[in-house]
Length: 503
Image (tube, rainbow, N blue to C red; front, top):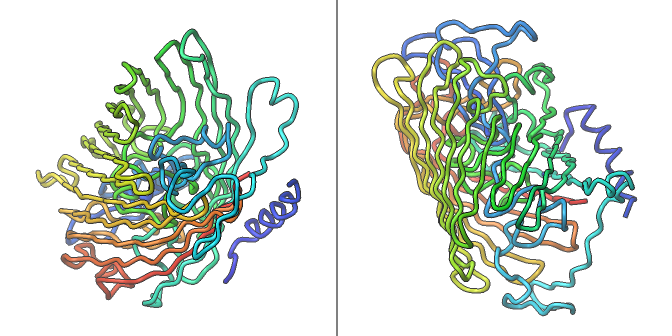
């Protein structure tokens, strides 16, 4: 194991000392037309898991600020999962439901008896979590300081020669220690008690290997070195929130509302991410989003943003983002529909991209929760040949709470990339150390099984085993790996574990 960044070593040392006080999407590839040589890669639009493919262009446009192409198409770290936002970590320590351990009343789940230690195969004797000391001036302004450290390692049974786990992200490095997220946040809730006016806001900053997947045009591409470094800085969110009665509006840079998984590590049931989250939705956006609660069961969302992973937009065309949410009276069933649509310019074309996401959740029993995610996307004429690109898939989870300390989770996913326009690694961007595969027209599958173990109120440890396979044609782009796993394989098995310390 190794830490490849001196800065990462220094930050980790500082953090270890500090703990004495008591966690892209990744569409960062450039595309070329069949038969052409790959164009010089550009910087992607940003956030976490690998995958948002920049639209093809003939000759790269150079940023006057840093001399590299600014990607207009890369996803970042952080759409909200279930009903969870970073603000939930701000006010109270993360609960089992927040991080994929159950999602129901885990205190009444099988094998758990609150207030005493449980012994057996999955022993549980949880301790109260601790939080960072809160400075007086933050307390006076109702603002909370907090964060987490996420770190892990992944082993690939194929021993890929390039050292990457193909399109799996953000744990994309084989056999190499990763400090994925050293995350700090400031949060002031816009709490009006259900009526009247209130204001709040939120700021995140993250350093780690996930930084390579969170580069927004006009933001992180101005501070990232593009020297093939492993670690980088991302600013996942900074926004102002205004609340009036049942209406809430956020203004600034924030997480999208599509899909189930999230950029923050603690909000997910697994260390690795789904293809669905990593490649098919806008993870971080810049603009405005309103959320209006119609009644106890229904709420609607609507807003506009600059584009996928764009703090500065190439074409200055606003995208629409909207959604509707329903929750049953007993809170056991939830259904969400959300969409994003707008012209994505990278930077010479001006094509409309539409993507929608359906997320269904149902508490089958006290310990068992089922989640299904269906995403669909269409991009108009990305190659200039009159043909549209399409992608779609189904992603399902079973989340079983054993007790307050343990959960067992399974994810089964199928994703179809009809035209080889979605699955593409950040390594396609010049200066990014990551997998550079792209151009796979076919079906991607993954089955992931893992445990969530919370030995104390602050620690979360998640071992997992994951099987990936691909059914489709070889890459249609000259010079790219023929197949997505190791360049010559259509399948792989990975074993991974991460540990998250919240504070």
